[in-house]
Image 1 (cartoon, rainbow, N blue to C red):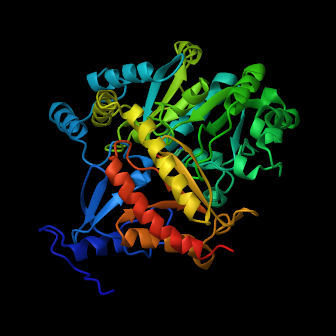
Image 2 (cartoon, rainbow, N blue to C red):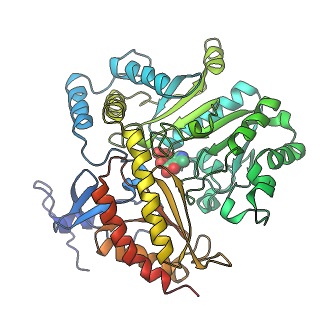
Image 3 (spheres, rainbow, N blue to C red):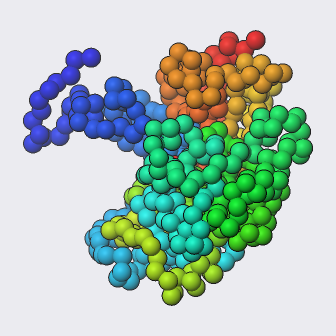
Length: 455
Ligand SMILES: Cc1ncc(COP(=O)(O)O)c(C=O)c1O
């Protein structure tokens, strides 16, 4: 592709220049710097469009953060109003937007979760959660799972179990791995997940603690419902049994709800499906629909009380940034006023039934699973053997069957995301039923490509 190398920087960049500077002067996350991006010029509701006017239906809510879709007017207005009033004030000063959001977090989080440290995103929320857990318990080890993503800062990437942690060197010191309650492919090979000690939770965790010494373990951190690594929903009873083991040994339970939280699963927080309250809950993304960087670490009453006489070992210049907090307040009010959580649960039921119809038709669909609008469609070569359509962490030629599916969808105007052999269906929570059906109509045709790889 021909690229211009010089541009008049006093005028607006034309499309060619936008693409050029992106490719030559910008570092794109988790990528070799050789892709040619579309130039996106706008968005509204569940749709965004490019410079040529082509429209895309967003079935992944960008990075599963645009829970309220593009350009929600109340959030945009709240950011504008806060910008007019006060763009920044340091974390030690009381400020209306910050205090209101802290109070709202107390109101909407379950149980005795009561005090929130605001961050700039999910990784920083998890970093602070484990630092606080270590400080509070006086213990060092953290138990985290393999099929997990907890963020890309050093300690958060150390907690992360997915292959992105392979590049992470030694910063996962003190992290002990636990297997995942992946009922479609039980880690122990049991056909029935009820027989699998990992899917039950407690037996597997107890065994790890026996080897590690529970008195050295500060916390167990888990994504309440696994997101990036393939939307894995734990079986009923799992989270309760992990909670009980933690209680038994004085280990803190940290639920990472950065992706699963804020209505995504059809409850405000995913742990509410199993009536489990963690000691620390981390969130980000849907907290303000991603409009301004924001994350949160919310702690239980005992930890909150402890912090009245013990130093909180963390801080950020942008902790509780007024613009971010104002957008968070507007976003939570929109969740309430527009019944977003109930809508997500209802639309999720429709999505599951439409996907089950697709599963009847397409032999490449091995399993459809999820809660609310947090849905994974696992593709296989063969339903009997459950051989994945592409291997775990496949790249390049090995991943061809999946990349052909997403490429076709994109050409047809549907933005879809995948992890290994799983398509993630995570549209905005306020997507219309008409748009949802339109997306599945494109997926139906895209899955014909996957079917060709089945045997
Ligand atoms: C479960 C989970 N935790 C943490 C993170 C990291 O969040 P951020 O990218 O805002 O740092 C992510 C991001 O995708 C996530 O899905």
